[in-house]
Image 1: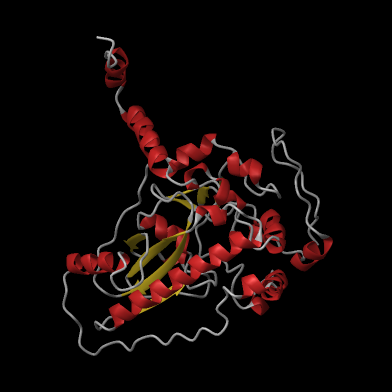
Image 2 (image 1 turned 180 degrees about the horizontal axis):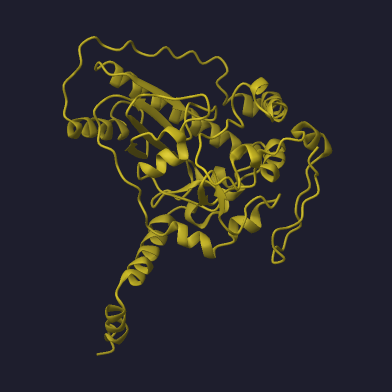
Length: 351
């Protein structure tokens, strides 16, 4: 059984590290979630499904079952779950509607604006990579449409109280409804489409797909940082064979910002957010310590503290921070001669 005793990662941490209850540690057993996630592995591979699926098939299924019981026993949380949801997808039309990729992109952008009754704040398209799909799952569909739905930051910031979890699930529900509606729209035009939202695990990891689609950069807390919404949003996805146009990653300096920021690291009760990147399945990136995170996540309604305290998530801050970081990136990219000229140029009001 994994030890419940944790040593703080940094001597600079001001708050004591939360220690998990013995019963949760026992439920986790001897299997390391970090090992399942591929920490220190040098070769890329499909991710292993670790949560939010059939608990009988998960190494930490007992922890998921405990958390589910906790949700169902809370009347407010139970009200935002969808246990009896029975969405029936629209049948794929036999006649395909011929539209150019540009026209299709206009159509899904119009859909995102809410004219079809399902407004989403972010939308982008990527071509799925095989290793985005969980082990044992795959798809031959050539595009994935990524949707982002904004959260109410005031409600999110109540984490770890149950009111934060209610907001998270409300937005998961909104994202799921939008993904299904978009899939139905595409299917009605004669193309295959499969919509999915959270928190249940779908066929693929949504974060790498959303990054490739241009929705933002990976943050130190393991969630995406968007230049408009910060980290205060949730994802949904639609896999399809409709002829679309794939986007590209949006790099605006959030990763660089995270290097010098310790806010989420210091705010995380179980000290699960490391101050440096690490190798995960062949890629060096920000990665949250699953074995430290899961026990607190399980007993605190899903937590969410890290994205709530993220400076990018504060209302109105993300656009300003993105502009600041892009200016810094531009200065670094300038040649030494251009930097010298910029430093010698007179400032406004000093001529």
